[in-house]
Image (cartoon, rainbow, N blue to C red; front, side, top):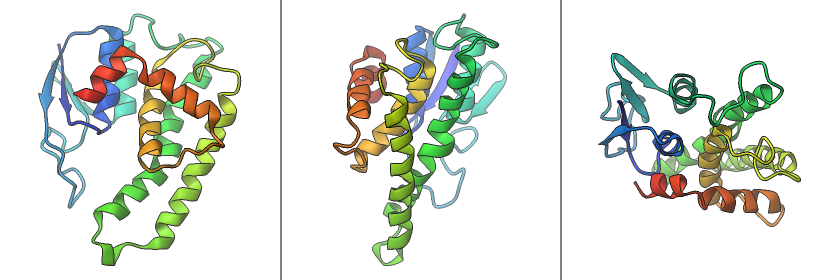
Length: 199
């Protein structure tokens, strides 16, 4: 059984959401998130969140965990099979969520954690520009689609859904993002999302 080290509102929401969407058994180890003074300082086996333990395996990085769980336990659910036409777009959006859209929001968070006298306005302003550019890419990609891959929900939507929660927290979504607004509402209506976001 997978053991998930989880703190509310952290990236471990992605893993918890995935486990519930797949209906997999798991053990939840509650961790209190502490604003990091240094990297890898959370109270988990690797110092990061999320972390899973699956037998002898201890693993961090939400996107990597997501791919691992899908490969080992997904039984073809929530991801297109390797070699199929949608596999490339699926991997693109899984990695876009954390590798492109999330970094500028991370910059905003780091500025928030600094004492006010140490915050750098130009860094925050630049982060907002980069985040908006990523959101605009998503807005266009969702034209005429319910989900990133079309009409079917996938684990790419789990990765992106958490990223878009941050976009909401930072008030980055505007009336220029109608597709994203309805997309987020669609994701938030899912029972597994609602359970993960409350845990």
